Length: 102
Image (cartoon, rainbow, N blue to C red; front, side, top):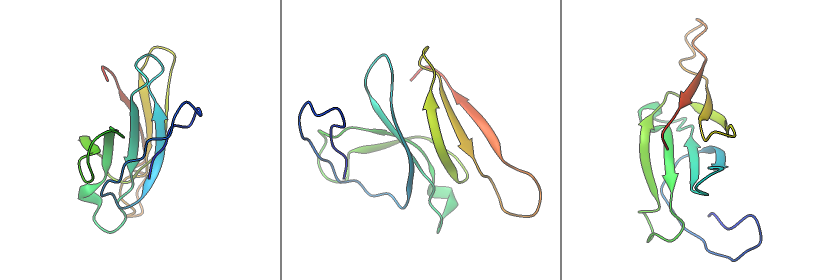
């Protein structure tokens, strides 16, 4: 469940995800975004736009698929940086992914 973190009001939304690892608000638009690690099925993980006013099951819209995304942060320009673990096959596959234009 998500709510307004700045105390302005209380709105909650339910959405189907497996494991939320990151949550951030866009510094210019105030829109919310989340990363879903999706441990059981990595093909379902990725970056999601969050709309707390949407009905149940429709509050999260997948923007891009990512293999085990974790933490994320916006810079002052509105570019989003996401730490991605990648596959655990013994090779270094971690990435820092930049997403612009959100």
